[in-house]
Figure 1 (cartoon, rainbow, N blue to C red):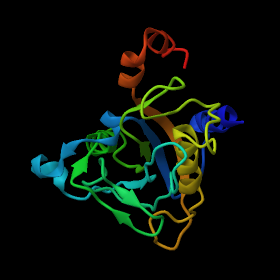
Figure 2 (cartoon, rainbow, N blue to C red):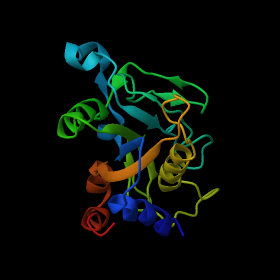
Figure 3 (cartoon, rainbow, N blue to C red):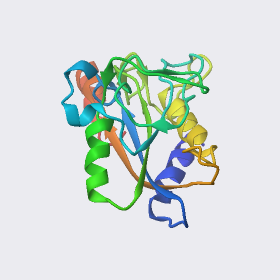
Length: 201
């Protein structure tokens, strides 16, 4: 069931929609996607708010509460590790991730299009079962059975449940364009078996 849910997101990559359309990118993974760069060290051209919408799902370890809750907002620095959301308000951190430069590059690629990012990432997580501090294994059953895969799906579902993401009173359409995945360190050093299984996973 879980595999089918994420496959559905991937299958939408070629769909077309009408009016108030946002080209939407899903960014996921572990620490390098979560973001450990310091906002205070950003160059001036990346400090300002960008004309890009972001839904950043609250990152938690497996079987914890509130994973994937979030709120649409304009993209600005602070969506790195330490970012929190309760679904009603976002609390920015002093860190940033790949979303800033990715958003800037995508805007240059599609200058006349609206851009949206859906993000879910937690540092130290692995793909293979029993790797990392938490994992993305689709058939995870430990505890309550909720892991990074489930929280990523929850993030996507919560983002798509909002009809007006920019708050202008008009419905918006999110058109999936791509999945950006940045993860692998936990699988690489956990064991030879998990490293060899990375491509298949």
